[in-house]
Amino acid sequence: MADVKITAQTRTEFGKGAARRTRRAGRVPAVLYGHGSDPVHLSFDTVEFAAVMRENGRNAVLTVAGAGTPQLALTKSVVRDPIKGFIEHVDLVIVRRGEKVQVEVPVVTIGDAASGTLVFQNTDTLTIEADAMDIPDEISVVIDGAEIGTQFLAGDIRLPDGSELASDAEILVVNVTEAPTEDAMEEEIDAEGAGVEEDASEDEAESSESGSDAEASGSDSDGESSDSSDES
Image (cartoon, rainbow, N blue to C red; front, top):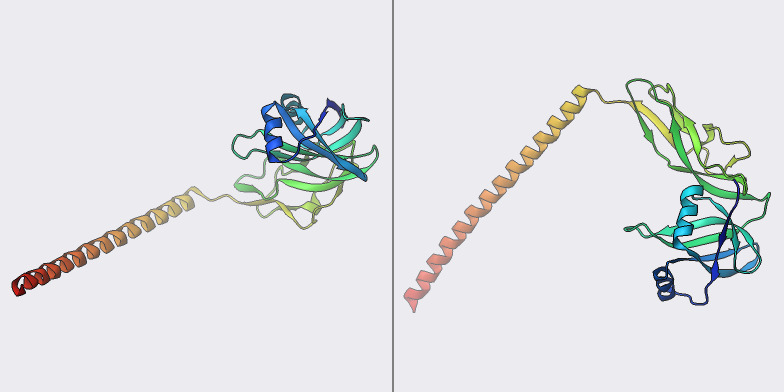
């Protein structure tokens, strides 16, 4: 993985209000730290940084210039707005060439399992240890022809050369199960439908009983009112 050069500006304002002003100015707030250095508060052009993430993935290694001595840094954390999706903040950690780092790498499946199967991917990422300059873009799990009952654990997956598994080796990554038959699906739909009808009937019965109780209560009240009037 080649490092990407990007220019930053230093920030002198901190806090939520300052971060909002930075974003309104078209820049992404960031902090750079690691290897015993004091944290440095930076900002990047929003469009440029988004393009870097899009083209180089979540584990992009950047050469950060414009804030003193250029630093080689790994994108440790990218926080996005949960609704609009724009980048709110970035954490960068300083790395050295030849250094081993732990990163989360996406897992993808390749191929098609055997006929009559249903494939569940239980884990979207695995944590590995790799050279900072040779982080894989993804981890491939070949499921071609996998039969019912086949399970792929983290420890069973072949990792890219130079990478070592840091996640628990017993984590279930992909599970191949039997696909439900058309008859089984129809039976399930019929059973769910019967349950809905039964619930509706119970609700109607309860509503009817409530109405009867209300009428009886109203009759009693009328009688009491009449008695009261007579007494007065």
